[in-house]
Figure (tube, each protein chain N blue to C red):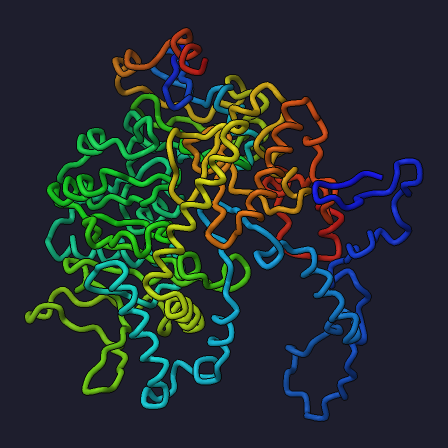
Length: 120
Length: 520
């Protein structure tokens, strides 16, 4: 199941693990990403909490947690080579994996059709 | 022969146009290497071998110093050539929105160079610098008069430093009230980046204030976010979209009612100085960028200076030092004083080693005295008039971000470029070829492909017309499918630089191999 936020994060859920990244639209709007800051494994976030930072030549932007939970893995590869975010934002360039603490929060997020409508 | 818009021949006929020159120089544009890339060894001065006995032991230098080997005329030429590659307000309009690049009057410079101001030392006995202290005191008086506030801290050294001072005062006031649970600061999404950074530096978390469709603070959304955990709001007025926050009094009242403080970012005070007193708007703390509103040089031309005016509630938490007049003499108060008799609520400590940016104080007061109160008001009016003139001249072919009049800045989005393949950055680079410093771009972030133009009051109608015609010509080129903008600038000393590579792989220090690495 894949869901989207108004702040252009995507979250893909398997079991109780949620994989989170920024959408292709967001990566395109940011332009060339030059810096990514990721949280430490073990950090706990509430839904909409500031989870990571992504910076391009145009702007610096927070990445918000689409759902509450604890970080179980981070994608060090995008911190080492931020260009990867532009190359495959919704695939290999995920940001963090978190252990879901409340599945019901997913209901408040958008499905793909609603997100496509949002970005026009 | 091709003629430019000013009716002068601009370039040779294509048939006879030459290729690149042998030297790389283009007439007055001289190609110049870094000073470190010059030959090393003997400088223009031959220093004798020192005769003193060497006591350095193992600390003794093992190899020569490797100073660039330049004679005096070579060194002179090097720096003059570099300076000629610079764009400056003394060369042309500098429409960098939010930065207020107004003319720096030469009278200010003359005053700042008076020996009584320029040649004094901050540790000199106070009896020998009474004139300088009087100047600081008088400047403080002007700032209090213009803002309608009861107190001012003069020592902060720039806008963001002033923000830090103001937010530290707010934190201290909350601590004194025993309200340590107020941990949240609200700031609009369009805020200057320094606002959330300052709040975070002071240990607060930052929450966005939503904007309404007119680009202003959404009052009801703000009210919904207020609560017993809110320490302060940080709002710029006029805001970073160049718009006056009409609900500012209601915003201030709502925040005060909820027990928080109102920090006003004074970066745009130049649009309202002499017209509106922030003290009347319910402001608790506001920094004043002397280097914007009061014309002192900045952006590489000089240091900033950011005095902070404070409300009665925050005044007890101002930093030292400050100047007082007692028995006809000016004195610096340099130690913390108790604000209450029980010794609690001390004045803040020092924010800087000494007393602030003395040279900027002289320039700012010189500007104030030469303009007078009515002149400062007219400068604000003219800045707003100029921005609205630019908005009116450009709005038929470029797209304003918000409807209606603006204050001192005209803000456009990039929808007029949609489908052309040209983006805001290409448009900005095209401006460089036309001889202008680009406007602020991609800020504020809430506007897509933002172009923020602040002409200031310094420009004449003739200058603004040429500027607007140049921008319209770029817009027309973009809309006519002229792909050459993607490669601009063509006539600058350097062509399009790779900003992405520079950010991803910054080479900050020259080494013999750095230039090679940077090129890779």
